[in-house]
Image (cartoon, rainbow, N blue to C red; front, top):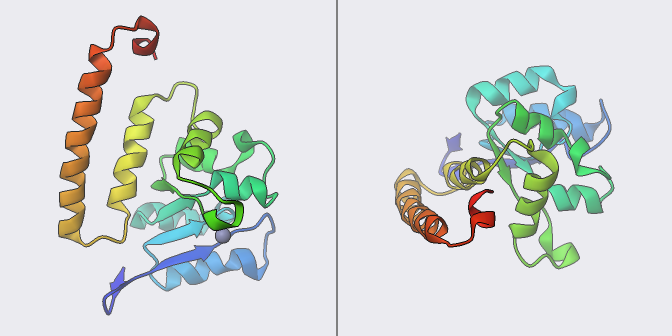
Amino acid sequence: MKENGAHFFFHAGETNWNGESSDINLFDAVLLNTTRIGHGYAILKHPVIQEIVKELQIAIEICPISNQVLKLVDDLRNHPGSVLIANDFPVVITADDPSFWGAKGLSYDWYFAFMGMASREDDLKFLKQLAINSIKYSAMEKEEKSHALRKWEDDWARFIDKFILLDSPTVITL
Ligand SMILES: [Zn+2]
């Protein structure tokens, strides 16, 4: 929700614990009308918050590499994000605190989300949805979002055209 010109994106639930201030702050984030939740890692332990987040379409920021570096999870197949993705929650992939480990871009996080959290059945459609979510749940204003979405759709269409024209059958069978 936008209150007095501010979009609220609250970092909450970045923990493995249950019942601590570090996960109970998920309730604060929702009560304060957040439009995105940074991490929400502990959300699976709070079914009421899950319900509200889904109903209000509050985006959950999944940060694969950060969570692994900070030892919340070893094997990304066990990341709560895999459950959120399977249950069609509005998720976006982010880097959390990229400067801490000198991350150079978001592609690595996307790679790990795709390889470790998505289903083996998932394909380009999954990546497409993630890209759309990045725009849809961004801090941009409504008009900026539709402009960005149109621009992205053009780029996507060009990418697909190029992809289809590729000669290599191994690439096309992806
Ligand atoms: Zn963080």
